[in-house]
Amino acid sequence: MSFVDMSPVMMGFLGGMIAALATTVGAIPVLIGKQASQRTTDTMLGFAAGVMLSASYFSLILPGIAVAETIYGSLVIAALIAGAGIALGAGFVAFLNARVPHEHFQTGPEGGAANVHMARIWLFVLAITIHNFPEGLSIGVAFGGGDQSNGLSVMTGISLQDIPEGLAVAAALAGQGYGRWKSFFVAMLTGLVEPIGGLLGAATVAISEVALPWGLTFAAGAMLYIISHEILPETHRNGHQNRATAGLIFGLILMMVLDVTLG
Image (cartoon, rainbow, N blue to C red; front, side, top):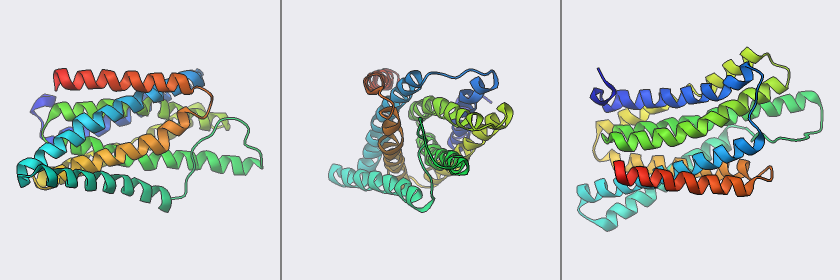
């Protein structure tokens, strides 16, 4: 059975698996003792943020509005549903951030006792795992809607973002004295929540057509929150704002062109 012949639910699951694999690929340099520069990492994250922004609009929000208008026969109602879905998606990720203690990883001197620094590293690992779940949901919802091009766009953007994240997790652990293989394995585990999210997201919207516009815009809201709250602050933390911004614009334009011409 080829990928195009699979059910939307199975495609959502496999899309999450591919994103998880991207996290694993990002951690590979730790095994061979190499690490991308911070400048390169920030540029890659900026590019991924641009791809995700474009995918949020063209592959999630616009299709969500179109489906809602078809169901309810009103563009106003469709727009209100889209707005509510985006708010719910962003609120869901914000709720996870508030309820589960975690920190963003920050490079440079930390100060304090070694065990405090170690705790910060593991909180960073937890933060990556937390926001990988709604990313998996976004992939699943996009595929669950039955439009493979939408699913591929969202999966591509999230997978590109997961590569430097996998490297960041593995490098943070290796820098604290963990073995290369253990650091690699933990980084790989942070991505395994994505196929679970992909399966749940695809199954939810596949059950009911009415749930589809809500699911699509909910996924967009989750992605937008992650971009603004998680990715962009990291890319502007180390003095590489211009490169990160250029990467974002290029990523957005590239995915926009692909969505319009191939979707």
